[in-house]
Amino acid sequence: MMRSPWLVALLCAGASLVHPLFGQDDLMGFFDEPTGPQLVTSVFKAGRIINVQSPETSGKGEMNFIIAHRFGRISDGWYDLFGLDNAQMRMGLDYGITDQLQVGIARSGFGKTLEANAKWRFVEQQMGGGSPVSLTAYSVLMRDGLRFPVDGLERKGVHRLSFVNQVVVARKCSPDVSVALIPSLVHRNLVDRADRANDVATLGAGFRYKLNNRLSVNGEYHYLLPRPIEDDYVNSLSLGLDIETGGHVFQLHITNSRGMFERAFLSETSSSWQDGDLYFGFNINRVFQVGQRR
Amino acid sequence: MSYRAFLFFLVMGCGFGAKAQQFATRSAHIAFLSETPLEDIQAESHEASSIFDAATGQIAFQVPILSFHFPKALMEEHFNENYMESEQFPKASFRGTVSGLDTGAQGEQEVTAKGVLEMHGVALEREVKGTMTRSETGWSIVAAFSVPCTDHDIDIPKVVSENIAEIIEVTLSANLEPR
Image (cartoon, rainbow over all chains, first blue to last red; front, side, top):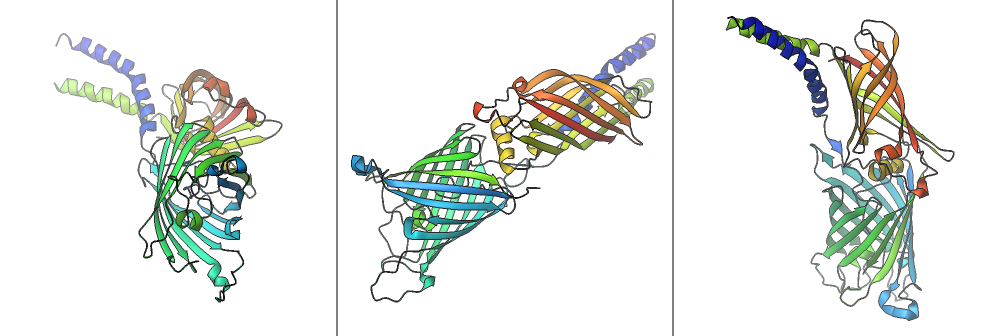
């Protein structure tokens, strides 16, 4: 027991040395305690991957003006300046009612089509618990505005309408890579030919790969599921580049779909990549904050 | 043997004693302002954590970058995606020691905290001035400091340099309760 006073002294010295460290560890420990799942944001840059909807919606009180062009066939060559002489245009306005719910209207020159749409991200992707994917429902009503052909058949206003409903299942896998799976249902009240089905289903996939904070490569593909009546339409494939400049997002792309609303590019794409029938196009997204966010 | 056991508990007791001197919160308020002739950009978070050890004077703050909210959704996106790269650097923190504080005194006291400010992956030695006030049960802390973006490798491109200030003013207020 001769050593015990030394032992006490040693322990006391040890305790006083350890003491501040003890405190430090406790301070760190306080921050290490889990504080619940974190929202995953900015899965894609714009409201559309290229043609199809991304999980992104306008923020609350945000008005997004989208002006999009699809030029003519690149294969038309010099005579049409590789399609640049013939542009189809779509102008759209999207408004965020909440950070998750958006409504929009749009007009396309293609088929003189008027659109009303709604988009709702009803499940958010979260880190550290919560859902591994986000789920976004998109529903669009399209009204064809072309004059009815004079062919003796009686048509009504309701025959101009078509609908698309889809769900975007999206996941940001890493800060650079985002993917999406998009099943869609297309319904046409009236088809233009007897050998075409009123209802068509597609299964789509899209991705984004960030090259840097302001530039990304995007792609999307929509597979036409077997239809009751086989038509001559083909799957839609688009590749593009997103460029963000601050207030604008520019999206440049090459696609085999010329229409810029869902029914057209999902179920009525007739040009094929194999034949080189491709269209160059762009979307410009410009955001205005018109309402209060908080 | 029981003597040693007694010593062991004595030492452990010291540890628990220190804990009673700790004050903390998970709802501290941090706001910042970027002021330019063209545009004032403000954001705030109510989700900052803070802990203060009155026995040692150690103090620490931490805030999730994603918890900062802006009046415009687009600003928030740009803040997280382009400037703070919040997925790569999800938190900003300050760890340091308070000097000039009399823990027994009442009323507002001017204090200085010296430590390391880390954000956007860059840790810098900083001295931050503020005030600490003993409340009935805990401490209330108020501080303000400025952060030059370049100090933390936050790159502001030329196109938006007129809209975003080079030096960001940060204010902080926290009510810490015994832990």
